[in-house]
Length: 152
Image (cartoon, rainbow, N blue to C red; front, side, top):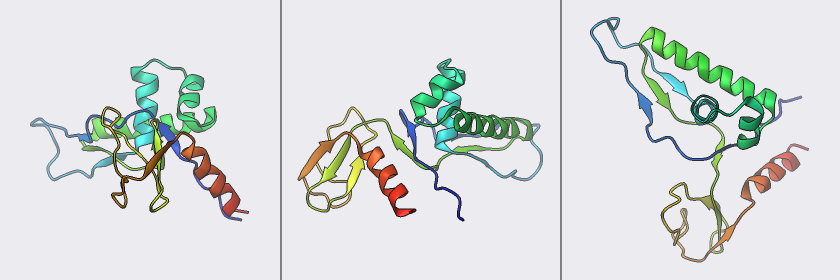
């Protein structure tokens, strides 16, 4: 029996930076390996430590269970602590996520896509460039339903 697939986690906005680098004269010789922080780990830290949400509120915001949120948050704290203590570069990227914004469906190529730049108007398909697009609200639920039906 194979493990259950990971559901996409809802992220409100992409981070404004893609990572951090250490500086100073006390760094160990050589280049220590980078620590990779997934986007859902970044979002967990942002919600709890920056916005002041408790784990229940943050889990609801990310559309995951509270125990799942706690695992994501714990992993993020461990990675950030490791980067600080060992003088490693922190890179924020990756993860199975979707952004909390509008979704679009292309009538030409049938692809679904979202647009993280909320302030810009969407005028063409992200895949084929067609301007025959419609706005839809529930694509993340469609992904989850399709994944669960394909696992049966």
